Amino acid sequence: MYIILAILLCSVYGFYLGKKKSQSLISKDNLNDLNSKPNYHGYYIFFWCLIPSIMVFITFSIFGNIITKYLVLDMVPDLVNVSPSNIDFLYSQIKLMASGEADAFSTDEKLIPAVDKYNSLQQIITVSLSLIILCVISTVLTYFKNKISLAFAARQKVEKVFKILLLACSVVAIFTTIGIVLSLLFESFRFFKSVNFFDFIFGMHWSPQIAIREDQVGSSGAFGSLPVLSGTLLITFIAMFIAVPIGLFSAIYLSDYAHRKVRNIVKPALEILAGVPTVVYGFFAALTMGPFIRKIGEALGLNIVSESALSAGLVMGVMIIPFISSLSDDVINAVPQRLKDGSYALGTTKSETMRQVILPAALPGIVGSILLAVSRAIGETMIVVMAAGMAAKLTANPFEAVTTVTVQIVTLLVGDQEFDSPKTLAAFALGLELLILTLFLNLAALNIVKKYREKYE
Image 1: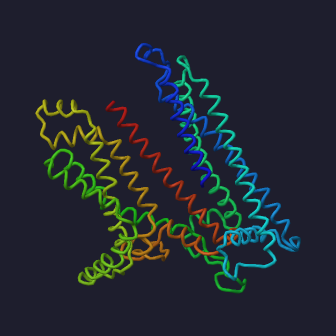
Image 2 (image 1 turned 30 degrees about the vertical axis):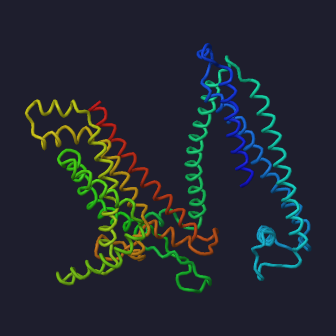
């Protein structure tokens, strides 16, 4: 940590030197002779100090840790009797003892020589790394400071560095997506080796409990995902039934009908809902909304449980109202004024202009806001856990307790789990199913956006 801070300070000092050197080359008479502005010369040296030093730090840290682990474990007595699965745990115990945070249960006198070796190696690595980085920065400062001149094209070189950084960020995003998809596919294929694919997709019973003994009841488990998926869609539908009309009508009112003072009060108040933690919504649904709906059901002669899909869906709908309202309001305000003026010139009213001109023109953005809200609803976990329960039921009755895909994923991965068990691997299959569902939603939304964008461009 201190080395990274030192690298940043030295790089900032390099920026100061580069800028000062370029400023010393110009005067009032040759002000326009400088190829690039002084800031670009400073950024040029800044990047040449920062990037090589960071690369040295990362490389040295990786290989240093590998060598340290090899030499430290060589000091452990009877290492040949330690199973390969426990070697990493043993090394973690050595590092914990070396940090001085180990308690009496984590301290082993046999490991003290290895701990001393670890501390000495860490000191050697820290000193060596500091000296190497100091030499690199000193060399870079001396060499590139002398390269600065009136004709030096620092701006082009700095812009090239920024292009490379932007490209690297794009590549990281792409490879992250590919990694997520491949990890889901790989683990899902392992799951489908144990569980039939069609039984998982079309199965109507979800009970992913693998018994310890073969003679125990339910030892094979039941992995039909239809009850889990139906609960997800049911709660999402209820949430969108609440959020879409309220959010869209709020956006229409705030954009064209509300007075400026009213808008300045209502819009921030709506957006506050987006900042409320989901656990707060969960408490509200479990302690207030659920019992309230149950009492109303009793008054009407309906059997409504406190933990129901209706309770979770209503609260989740309130939570995602700002996603639709705020984005739709921005999209409606972005519609060109000439479309509105042309409509008014033809004698239409404000409501007719909104229905026939503004909303169709803003539809791509509105669809995008609704899609974002749907994704938010599908991925919500805390509200469902606290307000809808964890019972996997294949039902369309909003008055019953249901569960969702995300809740089951969390449940399957909580605690100490073995990743060779179908029970744990089922979480990846559910994740893949959810990924495919959201992919189809994106494709449908893109088709709608493309259709109306071509119409109004």
